[in-house]
Length: 94
Image (cartoon, rainbow, N blue to C red; front, side, top):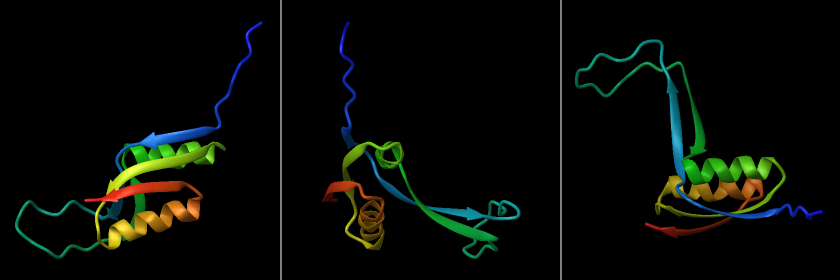
């Protein structure tokens, strides 16, 4: 009988993004404009690497993530988010 080995430590290499989801009543007309009426918005992390790391962490795996982020407020938000989630996040700044 073969022994089944379940790995609990996972390293994810992949993209990370900070997303702003905007909810509107109607799509704006395709004309040049900068002000739109929005119902509400939601900020979240995304991209393949970030999403996989978050979901694997929620499934109980010990996850480390490597990605590339910008040197800006959104990069800082990404670092803080992974810290709150308990994910070891290693990154380079682009």
